[in-house]
Image 1 (tube, helix red, strand yellow):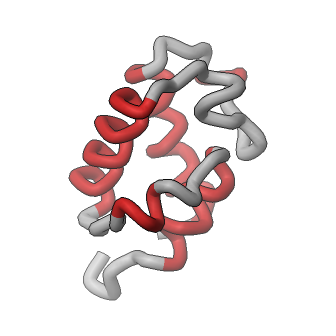
Image 2 (cartoon, rainbow, N blue to C red; image 1 turned 30 degrees about the vertical axis):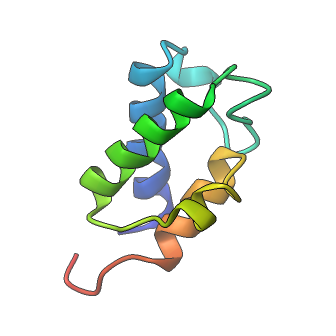
Length: 83
């Protein structure tokens, strides 16, 4: 899966989950500052990422993900070869 495809899927999830305009989503968008996501929102988002991409994201790794770009980087680097 290309970086652009990963970004598009993540952006769709964010637009739906955080009721955000899809066109306003970019890689610099910060979960806490720009989306006002609390810890429960973020945990639910991470669980949805795991389901969507078939990747397991440890709590320790999830804590380091602050922007959309960081999430895209993480998913891109942890893709399963079979996908």
